[in-house]
Length: 303
Image (tube, rainbow, N blue to C red):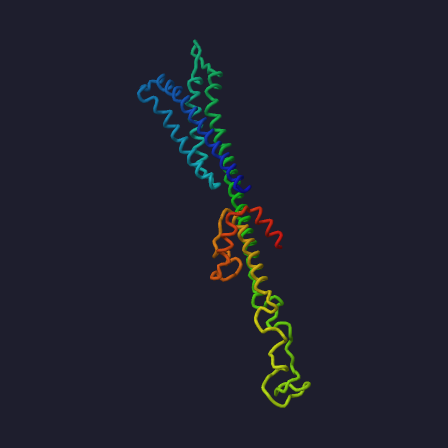
């Protein structure tokens, strides 16, 4: 696995852990609030059959805020109403949980709030509100980190594709020498002379015209002393095949590194050779079962 992929996986895993922890605290607070709020409402004349509904109703609003934030933060987006909903539900939850402790009176009828009870019942809602705000910042940061990791991975992939394309183009330019043979000329080892020693109309003994014939160059041959074929000294075909093989091998190594197995047609396109010759297919058969390190060493030795 590439470094960029590992980084994105780690970021995704961290976001998942944060979401699970936030929901764990939220569920714990909901269970705690259910009993506290139900007791408060029944003490104030609300029937026990419906008193339990208040706490879940507030918790549903809190869940809406949590789910909405979780989805939007994946894209690095925040909405103002989401913040309002989080704080409103948190404030309502805190009020309902601490109201019983606030409404305490001594034997003389004087207001005497239970400070210890207020502190105890303030812990779950305050913890959840602060945790939700921190989770929001974490999620936005995680979404940004994921985008940056993905952009780096895409940039690296684009650079690799450009490098492979440049190698293939260079290989195709090298194989164009098949038209000029091993020595890079079409005419063997000789040179074309403007005037020879023959008797042609265009060739006398020097720079002046001769006395007959129609051969434009001396000695009756159009060029030099070569055999006149396109491969010069006879070594052009082997050199071209070697250049094409090196281009195919470089392309094969790059593709295998990327987790792909090229076909014979892919190799022919990379090297600029004719698929009908079957060179790409033969190379696939020869390389498919060989270790990558061995092929890399072979390419380095060929270069």
